[in-house]
Image (tube, rainbow, N blue to C red; front, side, top):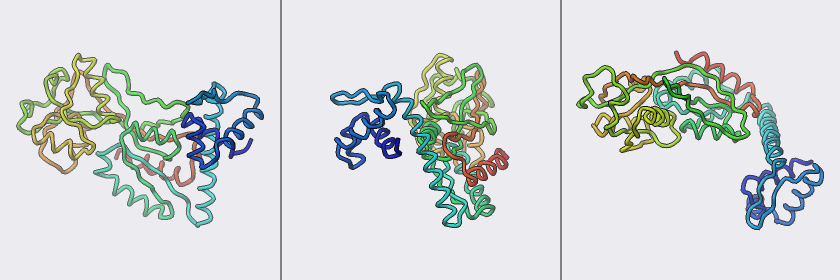
Length: 305
């Protein structure tokens, strides 16, 4: 069994087509088919159900695909470690964050502090919502990510599952979610609000993949209404500006109110209370380099202070 054969097999598994895989690999289709068949013969199992248009994994094929992904993550980690040693560096950390409140607030200064502590380590940064970041972790394209999961009073915790991925979620701290309104909104003089009182409001929300959006939708369904998302935005600053202008209300982490921006009023959300759990996620299949361990420990020390 050769790495080349496993790579060919994974390509077919991902696109479910010998033709598409051959095109991706820049390989003649007969040669690709021959290598996959040789792999099946050696292992003594059928890996793919071959059809006229699609080739689907058998149960044996699914198990081998999971193991093959582990193998290639190890190979990639080994290559990166050796390259770092050869260049006289301790390595690179591919890091993602779904916390816009942190990204627009303390994260730049934290990265500066870490660079001063470990100038030989490079940080490659990626910003996205929680669901896309977990997907990138599952694919082995990130080393770690700061994500937020949900804890709602009386509601099940928000879950994001990725098949065949061994993701480790380490909880760091918890932060309440609040209702944010403009200064002229009818609720602006209130200090707290029940979720059912917002049934007739238009919401300014984040886009699909956002944990806060999913938590709000989940809690609203249990309360008995469907939130009317008049506008969705990718950027936290945009959400705050739209709410301040009076175009709707929003549910945001409490720390969003500590950032400079337009005038807003924050109301404590009751019945139910909602909170986000900030967590450090990583793919346990992927080799954890000394650089990755050092950066993870740095984040544990600095957050949530």
